[in-house]
Image: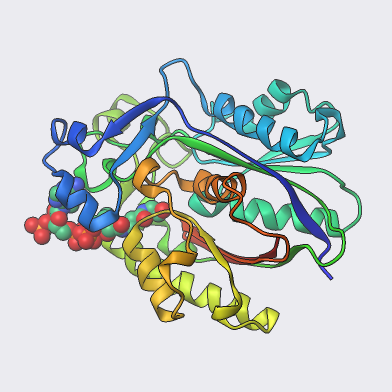
Length: 326
Ligand code: UT7
């Protein structure tokens, strides 16, 4: 019997659209290359006066409204992000204040694109322990501020967005059946922002060497992603005694269409079961899983009792899977 369930979802994207054709004017790339290699056509870019906490609060508010939960009822706020408003305090502190979550403990988790799945797992465990009743999990990323707009290998991939899930105790059969989380820190350097921390504190030299931007070995990340997501997905199915065909939906981190196609092919799951939005929003890192869930939910695509397979991977490397009965 599941112990917790998702009671509401929400998402937010900024208004400004940056298309592949816009990018053709910025770096040596083409719309065709980006579409063929990633499936992405456009992404959203936050307004200059927008920070991560603004986007996170907007998504969180919608999840609360959908769940019919008042801000003062939330007792835990978990924000997944690698692009917080500032290094100290947490992004969650600002979100807590903006949403008026006066009773909630609030903290950030850093698991990059896997952050929302990590957050969902944390919510599930806190609720299972019996001490928390209403946990708001938000994934937010304002990557347009930390990507190198001269690096065609990475800048064409990412977009800004936030997604949220309000989690509470489950009723009946509905709920989070499992989450499985993994990490391999030996792979830290294939996707990282080297500058601005204790290793390379911000200085004129780090700025000159562009160390405060995302550095990525895309090919390596791709290989690890296909392998790790497949393993984690198999683990989730086996744990629940399910076959791939039992799943009505796949809601996954939207990194690259080819990654998702490669993973689902291994399980013989048709792409028609996989909710996609990366064409419109690009890779929004930890925002993408809850944002995709919210789109599916608001489109009326998720029916009571449906089984949803989840998976996500990001810098760390950190990855995981989950199964939810809607
Ligand atoms: O959420 C996790 C975050 N990261 C990811 O998900 C990234 C995972 N990796 C990927 O999605 C893919 O590896 C990329 C989309 C980043 C790259 O696709 P790829 O098929 O692995 O291309 P590649 O890195 O093997 O590069 C192929 C060629 C290279 O040129 P040469 O050396 O063959 O002449 C690149 O320089 O494509 C070139 N290239 C580009 N060309 C046009 C790299 N980026 C671009 C670009 N436009 N934007």
